[in-house]
Image 1: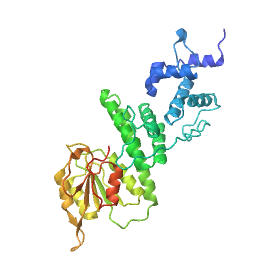
Image 2: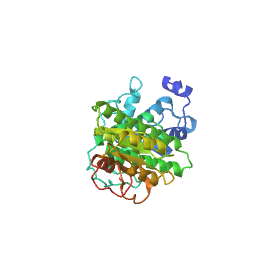
Image 3: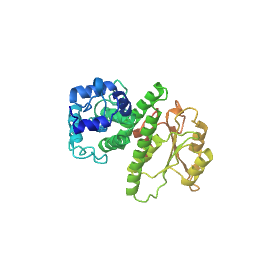
Image 4: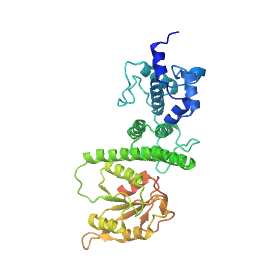
Length: 353
């Protein structure tokens, strides 16, 4: 029997195995077989012996299925949209908006009641939030495991747009970063590239939020809040989140970034005279309580009206009670409250990472 044009193309392009495609996309081979059985998302041509061989067009269809389920479309509807896109006249542009790229509108999820300050939302068995926020976390995690940079950025932007920066950080970005970190630790460093990808895009999202907010703010005349990591501390994402959230609230902010030497930190305090100094420490090895106390005791201003900066100790590296004159916010929302309303009493906790 003569081969059809489609079969000739598929024969020339031998395609990839189910195992290879599963590893590429970060899904299990069982998932691919299930999608084939339930929704007809299998390879158009089978090799001899009925082994699945996925052509370039098949792979593109499955990638679209992964992307649509990651942004919240139910699997059955995502499968229909992916097959429609595969039958379309041209390739689907990866730059089109997630809600119109396939011509199918992705439904809005119902909003859920936001937990109050210090409250944790409901959690699933994976440690990720349940409900709407859990869907964002799972979609974000799956996109990161697939190394799908576009889907990762879409998920982050959608979370910030839907829930606001503070809640997106506390309840989407932080839980997903932790989940990916646990996956990396338990797999013998197999997923370190996933954590790097996710961290990079989280940072890009936070900096975009900061730049957008700072570009709309009037020139500040008040002294800025000073944010800095302790010497030898390289983890900056929590400070980037606070930096963006303060900018959204039109609070002047000056962020020095990672591993700030003590001399440079003290020089900045004296030059700027900040109303608050936020110090981040990820581990006990980088926490420096004497330095924090020295900053808290440093006065600045004109003679006769000298004042001191409030010092906020953020991050798990600080351990227990901070001591007099030092504040311990337990999450981003609490840090914002303490910075913007400095007379409020501190909580005993740690800003989330």
